[in-house]
Image (cartoon, rainbow, N blue to C red; front, side):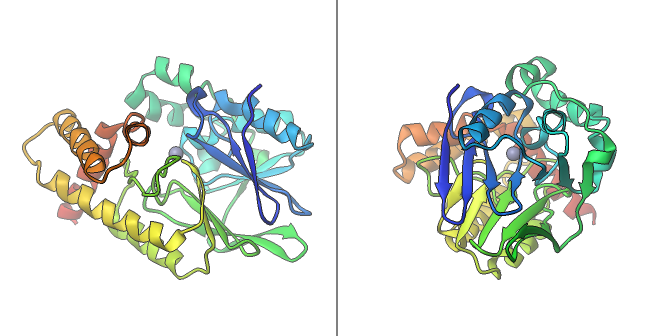
Length: 307
Ligand SMILES: [Zn+2]
């Protein structure tokens, strides 16, 4: 089975789980400290790739994991994880208690957007997680990694209200899930990821401004990989989010579908104008559900208008 694992300093492994059978779309992380932890599990269909990579590192038992949020591309394989490793438990936002043992609502939220057929083929069916395998997180909670090393959990809403990011105080790496946005391989810029119902610019910017105050060497994104210019990327993300919101504000008389195709073309043209190669542009645009981005931005604008 194909594997792609990159070892970083301080015993951090980046594991490509080949989401949708493609490289460079979803990374999980493993911190091989004296008290190790897995960060993210990826979708259900990716689980064999995750296990194969862990085993290639000689890791045959994983007792705990931390999940950034409750979207199925991040937690779809969670039921497999607790089934495979008897002792395993997961750290997650308290909404996990409600949804992981009965994942029907999470399933429906995605099938409403992508269809059930797409979801089964691409991310795979999900198994319920027993409630006693779930440990809920608190803001600023420190997870002990052994040898005086800690992983600090920050509740960081903006992309999703149930999002947590995790800060490793030894490597100064922030495992930021989807809060920042997307950075695909070969790209060095952030593409926003602003889905409904939770995207809220003011909340997200407050989160990003909090992170700018941390001492950061690396940002570890789910989509995709570890990046070594954290402050530039946070600035870049905020600028892009502002530009995307403005663009949608200027398309008031269109359906979400119409706006999304206009937006996709505009995003592509902007990237071409910046001189970005076609493969990178395809990476950034072909796998984005632009209609969902439009819906997320419009939902935020409506909330703001009514508040
Ligand atoms: Zn995601």
